[in-house]
Length: 143
Image (cartoon, rainbow, N blue to C red; front, side, top):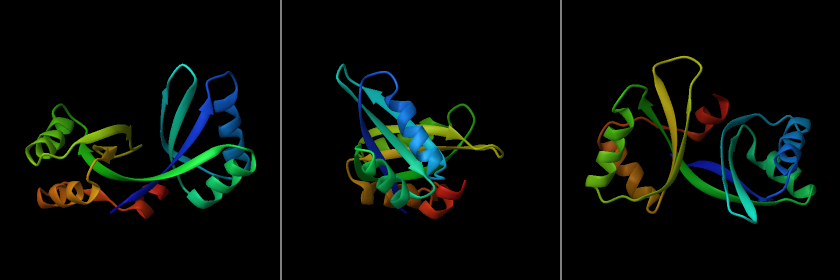
C-alpha cells in the first residue's frame, strides 16, 4: 500500500521549477500530484508521477538531486469533516503525520490525500482497520 514519491532539491531561484517541469514534459512524464516547500536557500519539490524510474533518471541526468520516499495515498470524502475523520483515527492511534498534500480527482466524490507518517506500516494498518480506502501505487500513478 505504499506509494513512491520522488523529492527534488531545488535552488531557490527563478526558473528552477520550470526546468524540472520541462525535463519531465520532454521525458513524457505526467505529474499526478505535487507539493513545494521552501526555505530561504532551497526548496523541496515532492512529486507523484506516472513513471518514477524514468523521472528520476531524467532529472539526475540534468544535475538535480533526487530522493525517494514512501508515502500513503488515501481516499477522503470530499465534504466538510472528511479530512478530520481520517486525522482523528490517526490521532487516537498515536500515529504522527509528518506532512501531507492533496488533490481532487477530476470526477467522483473523493479527494486523495498523500501522507508521510512517522510509522508508515502502523498508519496503513490503522487506516485499513477503520475502512479507510488506501490507494495502491499503480492506481494512483494512473489517475
